[in-house]
Image 1 (cartoon, helix red, strand yellow):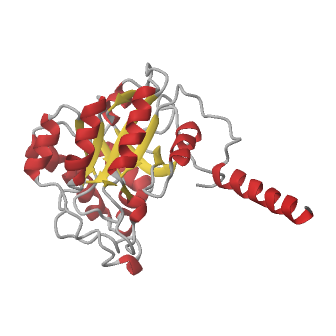
Image 2 (image 1 turned 180 degrees about the vertical axis):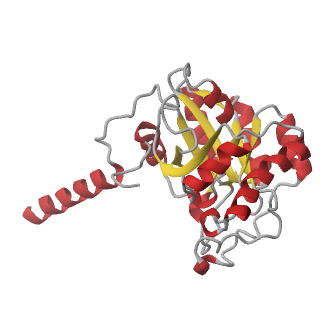
Image 3 (image 1 turned 60 degrees about the horizontal axis):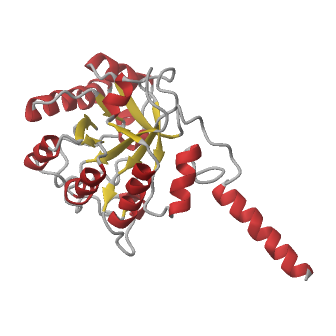
Length: 272
């Protein structure tokens, strides 16, 4: 009996640490900005499966948001309405520009009437940015993931559900670059998106979530009204730094409980 009680106590402690179910929900006046990458099945044995959320899981998440009365906005819409957003506002974001954002994500978004912002890498084809942050990740498979063609981006825009934001020219590790190159990656990305797709590009996402005051300054000078990070959290858009907006990471390894908890607090557990 003693061993059983100890085991149950340890299990309860682990569950509480892993899921932090006891944490209070962040004020629902603050929007939840969710960060995704791919909507596709995981690849057994491959790295980056955390970036691959299955279509089934994604639909369950979007269906839940719809059923519970969440209000959907693009990132630019949410920022523009930041002083008057309704309770339970949500922004769906996708980084990089994978083809499954069109083939798998868009039909689900359309089905439930939800919008999204896709942060597009301009030079995204045949490019392996896996190792730009950590050399050990070179060749880990992101190069082989199908990316959106320009015509497919136009289809997304034509749907009326998608906004295109910028994610640099090459998915660059910005702090590792000199001033001129870092500025070019940020500013030209915006210009090329606007010229190629005849759409306003107001929103920027820092690749790998790596940036400093220099990159924030370039984003502002280039004409972006705001920029999102990979910092985990939920913020009041009306008062937070507009060039340092946190997001809630949705992982392909999340079960539905983890998703629900992240909607409440921004994190699955104590640290993640």
